[in-house]
Length: 440
Image 1 (cartoon, rainbow, N blue to C red):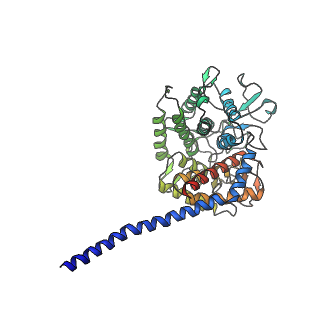
Image 2: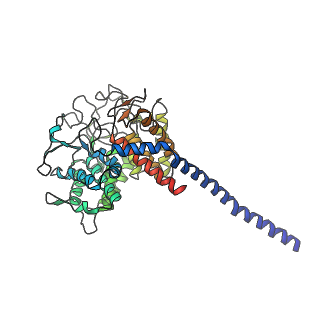
Image 3: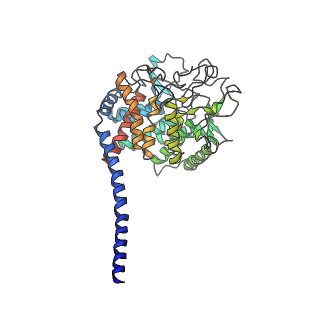
């Protein structure tokens, strides 16, 4: 009997040892994989090249070589690099320009430009608070207000300079002007029926209407709609506003409740649970497309990335969205996950932008590169590094940060020094390196 007890003790000890050792060996293997990836990222000289070139380009503030304007939707995506390249006072001055020419109803313009160069087809706006400058607003889009608030949050996060919130412009502090911008959306770009942000019909995050003509301005042909991009950008702005609002500032409304309501309604009206993707549009006064055209088959990549960053999706859904983006890119020889939409809108449905041109299935690192941050948020560092790689390679091969790329030929298009792409790549690389340092 004594011998039997000894054997039982030995067996129990053996199994206890297995319980202790096996998970440790498994964990060790996992850690080793992370360490290997981390070291690979930190040793990747391509990232050094992109970062140094980006910082050099981001010494300026206009959107790129083809643009004279400082666009807020662009500036919001390269302000992190700007703060590396330029003194914070200069960056702050550029941000304040948008508040100095803010509309009385709280709206924010797209771009500001030297008034001597205000010679494009826009309807320009002027303000005595910003002498020597003109501004314009692409009224079909609804991301300008959100972009400015996000940019201010980034500025504060990087510099620690909260004094920008107390800057007085036209007798009104910036924090109040920020809230007025948020309120403008609820008054002028809002659907009470759906509890969501509205805008004109455009392609994903784009700022051009389908009908021929000056496509960036609201007109009698405009079809009002709700899309994922505008709502994701607004919720991100709400979260950013709440993160920086001073404790002694009394807000006009419960913005946290507003953000929660939009998040709920996004899931209710825009997320297609069966297809595991966002529908392109929810129309308010009819669709601009023919009855036989099934728009819901189109994958919106940029808006989907912003939705992930806004916190609308579960970890499993994030993986599926990424899978669909990779699958779409695999159908075109030179595409990355930056391909705007897939498949493109047929020419007869969207005459203002032909298929595979510009926002109609052109490839934009400006948005594809944001997926790296989204993937890192959900622990997918390997995917982030892998999917960033072809974007890095083509910047090096083409010796420039181009605005967009033709997925059928691989040719770079648009501005040859597009600061939006440079800024997004800079942020993606910074995020990857931060992860790598923590896991090496």
